[in-house]
Length: 100
Image (cartoon, rainbow, N blue to C red; front, side, top):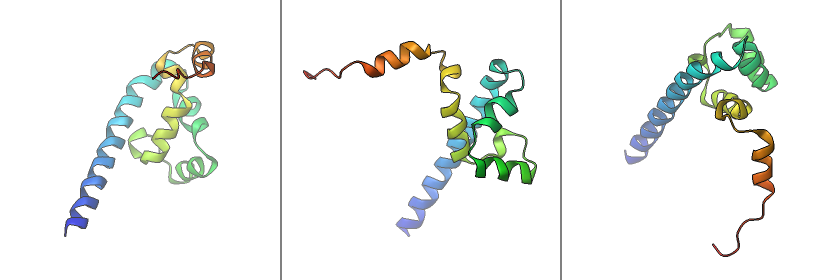
């Protein structure tokens, strides 16, 4: 019984994460892109994800699964975060402090 409760807990938690991420992206992406659904969502998805969405006629972030939402977030992270790409890449190239 404990296994079933654990699975139910994680399933519920991941569904809530997907719901909140969709709400967040719906609040941010339209202000960053003129045609945000095509530019920020469809163009960010893998071939299989995009085909599934186009075949099923989905047109809302809330209808996407967590994997697709995470991919949209990742592919649009620079625009969403407002981080200058050069500054971000510079920070990655910096050596990790050895004294920590």
